[in-house]
Image (tube, rainbow, N blue to C red; front, side):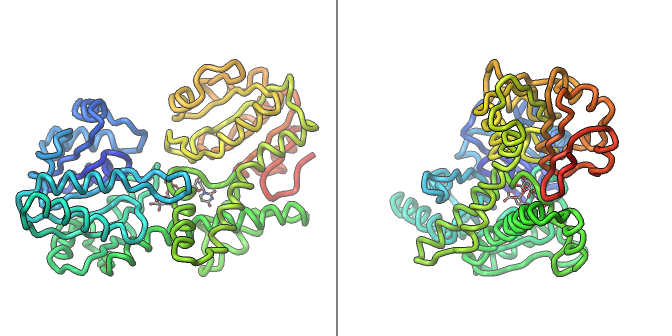
Length: 443
Ligand code: UGA
């Protein structure tokens, strides 16, 4: 099928590549000419396992093209995906200006029937707004052309985006149109072979499903973080509690890892947007507000702990930081807990020596050159001259460190672990102090 995708961010680019890979003819359109030029040259701007070779091979096969030409895009695809950003407004609501701008663009170039499929995470009611915008723009042109607006939210995870997109748990389709449903069944048939993963519903329910999924996962994380705080105060070990509750299939093991708080471009933004949506209906979303507040507090925990350990000031101290990305396998630092940590360390007067396997370029872009930040090319280099170590992201290379070397390098022999990577007994054997989340500290 011929598909056009507006927006070459995470969602648009991955979906485009994966659809092309099963044989569809995909055109990705973006207003960012530099990004399009880079993609045309086979350069993928994001760090995502498996994405670059998939983009390059499908481009070479002529099934995947990149363009800034919106008119060509509208002419190309019978299905037109909206995968543009919905950044949060100041009040936490999702800003729809890009989505509605693309809707107007599509309407201004349409010459035949089109199915507009929304993949961006947008508040409930947006599909209706897109339909109204397209309808008004067509009326202004004085033409009557049939179109449908479908909600088809995306559930991919950064770092596993290609795999998630190729093997979706479910494909949510929000539409009342059997024509549109038929088109999407055909489009997704290669991903829907073994058992029917397609869940068809009304548009508003599909839009809410996306927010409900992310809010549920964020709730699990804030819940376990709350219990971790409690465990610390009660002398219990959250890792034992986590395994204990996870063994109940009704609870499950996933998304109950305590840590330095959730980050990234989705959970913080989507929970806030859902709170805003709820309030706009006059409903007070007590639970969601608590989830959001717990996370804000949790992102401060690691910094508070380090500053507290040193009696309130880090002047003259150098802290090694392992991990800057908001999670492993990505270079994304949006809303990353590491940013809260670095700000807290700097505010207390510390110097930071940081390492991340993928996010060093991002860190340089965000923080620029500053005398209290040294970006190091290896975990070992970050330790040189450091007083203690803080771990924020659970990259694989940090999982089995040379504890003897840590004990030799760290002047204060102290490890602050925001991800509970190590067995406290092993750390203690090497003469290191160990402070982690929700577990009794090793002195
Ligand atoms: C999340 C969802 O998992 C995807 O299903 C969804 O499609 C996506 O948002 C989206 O809306 O686009 P993502 O933000 O890429 O995906 O990352 P996650 O793997 O969900 O992690 C989010 C944050 O939660 C990370 O900071 C991670 O460290 C934290 N986390 C996760 C925990 O602190 N504990 C856990 O047990 C799990």
